[in-house]
Image (tube, rainbow, N blue to C red; front, side):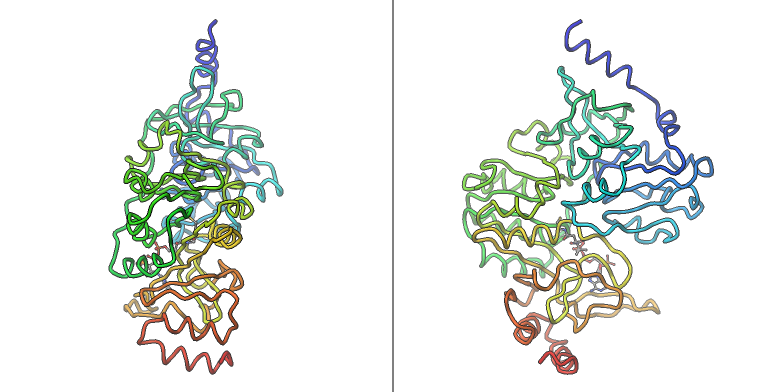
Length: 441
Ligand code: COA
């Protein structure tokens, strides 16, 4: 038999139906799913069929893209308990009785998990094997490869619509126990519109950027605006957690070429990709894009090997001493720490590197009676129950539409003044009074 025939034979032997894959889920075990657009939709949708048939199954997700019943239906209690490394819309309103957040830094999500217990099942997505049997995990290597190497059972939904990407995403068919054939479109992230505030924030950051920087852009609307600003620069490199639409556009415009990068020059390095079909077509068989393990890409010591590494992330609120909350609204988990601390710290460890935390000066929120009101996002104290995503000792630049201040190394007294100077003018007097009451100034 030729190599191709051997691989085809292996592939056929591993094929199973979704229902047969679901039979592998046993009581008191753990199922880990791939991140975001790499999640295994058929298997995850099918889990609801197991309601009452198995007990106490823990399912781990990160950035899930759908309202899966196993975590939204309260009747799943007893069958499934869902643990999330990064929450998205569907989980925010899901019942707490079956949902729990796993505090983590993204670069350790996989390794921390494996320190606790080995997963029983890992389920993800992949491209069909090539003639040598190599398959690509396609859209994420954040923790997926670590799980493939450690799970008792590896199940992959093989889908020709997924881009065949390179880097640590490449595994061999021999590492896979079962294959489900799938043909759905990979989930897409709509491009967030750029607001006037975003443009002002991007302009304030732009003053601190220069040719030859290496860039990480976070999740949310603001980073898109920054991406557009960068059209004025040249020789930009990418070392980022998430590869985005904006980065593709900058590559196409000739701005990103990675020529001056000190780590992996000429390559765009990331640990997952999330965007439109156009982005997925761009990364398909693109040797300029390397998708490596999250525990390498997001390790601050690795990030720091890039000179002039720039990290740009968003936040929900910041207190007057510099504590940043980017993942919860009060006690309610909104998203996750993700790679915010990883990338902010890594950038500051890099020679010539800088970290930017961006936020609008205000948010328009509903109060407990359902009425809308405008609140300041620069606050005397974080909301009761809010989680600190970035420790105040790790905060470098802070940016709102009122400007950009650097608070790294400053005393609380100095920070209070700088942060009030970029708060919305309507709240500055109140913030000053509160700073006095709290004995900061
Ligand atoms: N209090 C109450 N609600 C607030 C708020 C505050 N201080 N600040 C924002 N909100 C509300 C907004 O009004 C908005 O509500 P809506 O959806 O009803 O309009 C919602 O929270 C989201 O705010 P927005 O500013 O639009 O968020 P975003 O989509 O730009 O995302 C983060 C911002 C901070 C949530 C996101 O960047 C994140 O999760 N970061 C942590 C992880 C990270 O940075 N990773 C980096 C590597 S990829």
